[in-house]
Image (cartoon, rainbow, N blue to C red):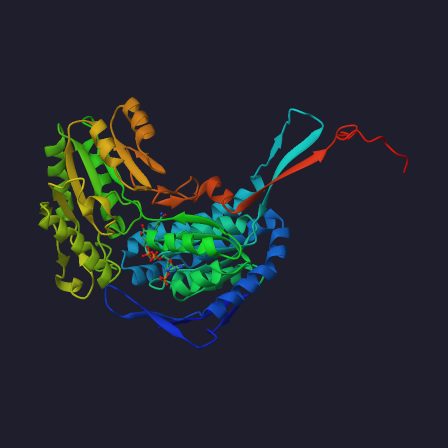
Length: 497
Ligand code: NAP
């Protein structure tokens, strides 16, 4: 079993009280890694290291920062298979998904943000009164804390860590206690790439302890959190009492929807509905668990969808044939099944799936059958809450307007999709759908180069792209008087001096 310590100031150290915890492979029940379990004292040490490194890192030229980040990308690429295997073992997602999404996206984050600062442009503002050179500069905040969830551990960690680093901030980071290993291994990559001590510090251990330490520290300026709305709200409450208010970037849960018009290309629409809720076993923040289908194509859509759902192969995450791996743990399984069983008791109909899967090699894991429900009502719990499992609710609608109205009937605002062959329909739906990402003849995708994030209970702030970079840059307006004589506002006579 792999053993990992805390990565503070470019050194691997035990927790001060020697505490550790062990992660478990949800597919097999076997242990994966033992990691140091940080106390608040350890986290405070990491903050001290990050603060001490901040000035030097800020003063390092963007090109030099970028070179280190590109080197880190290369080191991840060299260890891609090892990292993919660990990611799959701790999350239960298929090894294939880790190989083609999780690890490549971490590499792309280092590469994209490794290059972006050298081309970053500021602003010059022409003021009406003249005589003033007004320019806007962008500066790092100082110490940024990054907190990531378990569903895409290294990918979601690097989605905040990379722009924050590129912008010249130093980092104290923590992955989920369920899946901390690849995040901790980033420590090795950071050290091997040659980053100065203290620039990146990586903690493992309970979220509550980390939250208390960073929110109560006057030396942490930004907290970038990806995770549940419950913890997001907790951070907002803590921020109200923090000795120094932090900038928060909150990437929380979602309740995605797809609207399918009568002229949609049905093969693509069906595949996007399938991917939207089965990718990563549905453990995706923007998973599109609701589908609204025009009545003209509803029967055909359901026929194609159901056949494909039934063909999905549930199996060991390491099996290249597997489409659906295991959910993260028993709690996750019970949560998903609870939603389904309460929906059925409330009148929903199971078209396919609807229960745990325990056949053959899946006996030990927390597998859930890809599930389609119909006869759902908008007021049902399952239509309102995030499920985090492969469960899709399909509703027949009379037209696209009804679909859009229902898709928008949610407290979340992360992702929504529309399918139509008419570009005018796509454009109009794109304007009307209330979400941070609207996919048009596409679904459930983010990319390091373009902004991603939510509104309402899905949080605020943006990750990825230049918008993601700006979250970690503090805006400063500079006014320099360049006129011939500074204004004599009070009319005092000039004196000799
Ligand atoms: P979570 O329970 O909120 O945990 C997320 C992270 O926060 C973990 O590292 C956790 O550490 C830590 N944490 C827990 N309590 C904390 C506290 N009081 N202060 C500071 N940190 C704390 O979420 P999850 O179950 O890991 O992830 C699933 C959720 O994330 C879903 O709601 C999903 O929609 C959301 N998500 C959103 C996005 C997005 O981009 N919008 C992307 C992915 C996931 P421990 O593991 O040690 O408790």
